[in-house]
Amino acid sequence: MMDNKALFAAVLLGVLLASPVIAEKLSGYAFVKDETRAMQDDDFANPGLLAMEKGAALFNTPFRPGGKTCAECHGEDGEKLDVQRIAGYPIYDPDSREIVSLQSRVNTCRSRIADDILPTNHPDLIALETFVRHRAQGVPVNVNTAGAERQALLTHGEELYKTRYGLIDMSCHVCHTVYAGQYVRGQKISQGQTNGFPTYRLGTGEMASLNLRITQCMDLMRAEPFPPDSEEMKLLEYYLSARSNGLPIETPAVRY
Amino acid sequence: MRIAQTVMLVALLGLITAGTTSAADLSASGLPPIEPYCQWQQTDFMINEPLCGLKGDATRGRAIATDGSRGNCVACHDMPFTDVEGYGTIGPSLAGIGARYPEGYIRLRVVDAKSVNPLSIMPGYYRDPSKIHRPAKMLEGRTFLAAQQVEDVIAFLMTMK
Image 1 (cartoon, rainbow over the protein chains, first blue to last red):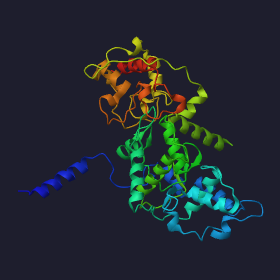
Image 2 (image 1 turned 90 degrees about the vertical axis):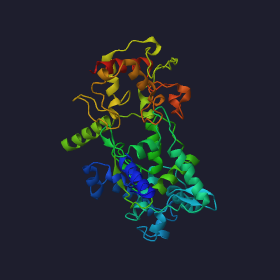
Image 3 (image 1 turned 180 degrees about the vertical axis):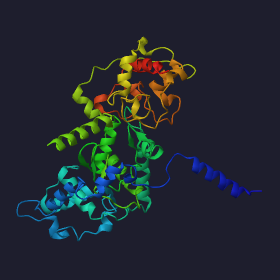
C-alpha cells in the first residue's frame, strides 16, 4: 500500500501533467514560425541588424558637434561594456530607489555628458539599446531579485501582470501564461519572455523595445496603455525581465 | 521590382490576416456616436431577450464574426469556412454551434462570457462600459460591439447547424 507521501506525490504529478500551462521556460523563439527563426538566425536577413548598425553608428557619433561619443569610454564596439551587467537590466537602484531600464541608463550618460536625452522609445534610443544589448547576446538574462525592496517591486509587477485591461479585458497572464502555445489567428502565443528585446516585429515592420511592446499589447487590448515612463510600466518591465532570468539574450530577435 | 511588389503584398496580407485591430487603428476609420447601454437580464445562464429588442441579420453577422477589427471570432475559434484565414485554437470550434445550444445560451456567452466562468479568457462583447477597467481613452463609454452587431453575430451563429 502507498504511504501518504507517495500518494500525495502521485496526485501532484497527475495534476502537473494534466495542467495546460507550459511549465518549462521557453524563449519566444520556440513559438514563432520556422521561417521567422531562419530570418533571425541569418545576419543578412535579420532586419534587427539594421537597427544594430544604426546603434553602432550613434555609439560612435558625438552627442553634440565636437563633443564626446559613447565609444570614447566604452570602446568602438562597446567592448569595454560589462556584458554581465547588460544582462541584468532593468536594474533596481537602491540609491535613487528607482527601476532603471537600459534606455534610461543610456540617457543618464547622455545627460551627464551633453545634457541631451532622448525620449523613451525614440528610434535612436532603441537603436542604441539594441546595439548595447546585442553585446550580451548568448548571456543568460540575470536580473537581480535579491532583498525585500526588490521582492516587493516584483510582487507589485506580478499584480499588474495579472490584472485585466481594456475592452478585450485580458491580462498578460491569461494569454502568456495560461494560453501560451495556443494559436490566436494563426500565430502561436509566446510566454512573453523578454530575452529577445529590442526585437524586430514582422507585425509592425519596426523595432520594439520591451516598453514599446507592452504599449502595443495594451493598445491591442483596447486599453489605455501605461505611459512609457510611468511607475506601472517600469514595474511591468522589471517583473517581466526577472521572469526571463536564465534565458540567453537573443537581441535582436525576430518575432511576429 | 516584381519581387519588391510581392514582398509588399505578402507583408500587407500578413497585416490583414494578423487580424486584431488596436484602438489606434480604429481612430482612422472614425467612430460612430456612443449609443445608450441597454441593460439585459440573465435567467438560467441565458439571455433570452434580444439586446435593446433588436433583430439580428445573419449576413452582416458573418462579416462581423470574421472581421479582425470587429467581432474577430476567428482569432480564437475554428469555423467551418475555407475563405477565412488564421483560425485560433483557444476557444472551442463554432461548427454546428447553432444546433448545440439555444439562442439565449449563446447570447449570454457573446455578451459576457465571464459572468458564467470568471476565469474565461473570452472578452465580453456587450459589458456595462462603466465596469471596464482602463479602457482606451477614445473608447470610454463604449461596448466592444454595438447591440445591433451582437444580435447580428448571434443570428449568424444560429445559422451554423
